Amino acid sequence: MNLWESLALVGTASTILGVFLTIYGVVNNKTLKHETKLTRETIAQESKLTRETIAEETKLTREMIKETTEYLGNLIVTEREMIKETTEYLAKYLGDLIVADGNRTRLAMSK
Image (cartoon, rainbow, N blue to C red):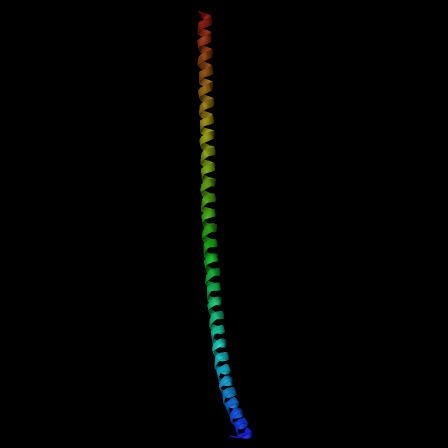
């Protein structure tokens, strides 16, 4: 085998190898593009689910805050009414005690 035949053989092998690598690169590129597309779709779905979950949790939290605020408001009103009733009762009771003590004092002084 002379130099030119060896050179032709090496050139042919290089061409075959180049064609193989080109085909492999094209297939690999398509595979990578497909995998990238699937990855982006998955990330978009997860992002959407996360936003929906956050929105739902926020809504539930706001409802709980609203209910708690209403409950506390009603509790405050009830407590104010109870304090007012207790104050009125104590004022009446103290007034009655003062009147009764005044009557006892008058009776004791009139004897």
